[in-house]
Amino acid sequence: MSIESRPVTPRAPRTDAQRNRDRVLEAAAQAVAEQGTLASLRDIARRAGVGLGTLYRHFPNRDALLEALLHQRFAHLAQRADALAGTAPPERALAEWVYEFTLGAGAYQGLPSTLMATLNDPESPLHADCLTMRQAGGRLLEAAQESGGIRSDVAPIDLFALANALSWITDQAPTLTERRDHLFRLVMDGLKPPSDQG
Image (tube, rainbow, N blue to C red; front, side):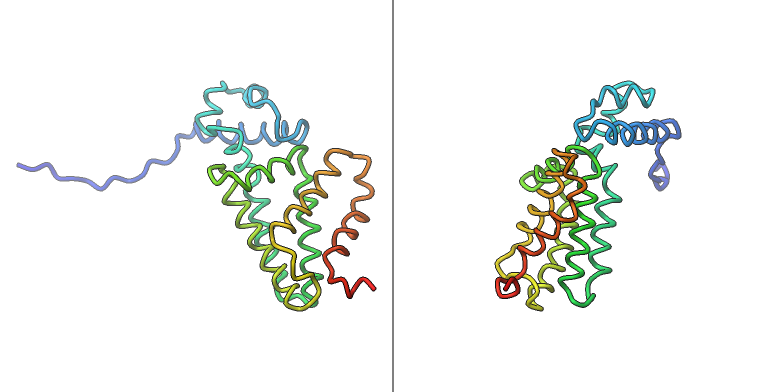
């Protein structure tokens, strides 16, 4: 006599577990905004009113927590690049996207360094979102190069590194924040073909 098998449906997260995860993310957003990406995980757990073990059950490491915080930001930048595609001239679309990237990368203290660290760490939870975002920006770069508005020897990684460096400068020296637009124009001017520079 066989026992009739019933289909197994995936269980939704328990209400209290989901509530704890949401509280950790809310506390993390506040702590990272105040202290940067190296904010104390113990402090985040304390702010959320949970134990450190509970935090680690939801987010096994710092990058996993940052990925949950930053996923929407990265996804928006990738979507923004797709929306800007076809804008004329293409170098203007690229400049607009790079500017938005530099503002986003400077949102949290320490984020520029964290983003650069993901380049060589495919195991990082941040890596996939960063890669998608960089590839979207790379398509804008390629279109701008094909139109002749951007030097042909600029690789997507060069663009990412320069934009990230600009964010890092203002991250390390807040007094330069007011000079960000000037520094941004210098970077974009440096990406133009030499003949455009007179």
